[in-house]
Length: 143
Ligand SMILES: Cc1cc2nc3c(=O)[nH]c(=O)nc-3n(C[C@H](O)[C@H](O)[C@H](O)COP(=O)(O)O)c2cc1C
Image (cartoon, rainbow, N blue to C red; front, side, top):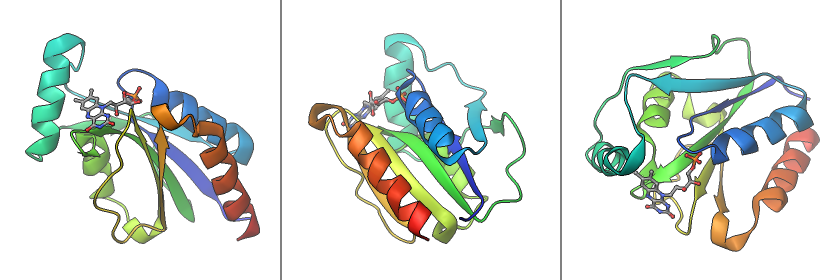
């Protein structure tokens, strides 16, 4: 099996839960992206939508260096139809064709799926979290 790392950003914990499940199943490192912003509360929500839809840049750091991997699994919330600004920033630094993207949302899917190794949507209203995780793990183990 290839050497995987799971990387995630979260505001309310869903992406962390999913990243940790993936990390457990793949027995690999799980790395958190954080930033210089305060996304809490209703103003944080509004700011998040604004930053995401306008492609505003945030300053990110990761809980450990992202190195020595074959492929990354990147877990991100969907904000205003796009991956969250932190994840966008991270993806500027890695090759998209080494990334399995998992987008976490309440109801909608990401529009731009270009160049990634794979893109999956975990959608709260579809209750498909474990199914998507298990299918991805099966695919990764085969390769
Ligand atoms: C600023 C903002 C914008 C969002 N926009 C969308 C959206 O366009 N479509 C959607 O289905 N969910 C949207 N959501 C909901 C989140 O994608 C969803 O709650 C997700 O599970 C949050 O992940 P987290 O717990 O890892 O932060 C938005 C949430 C925030 C904070």
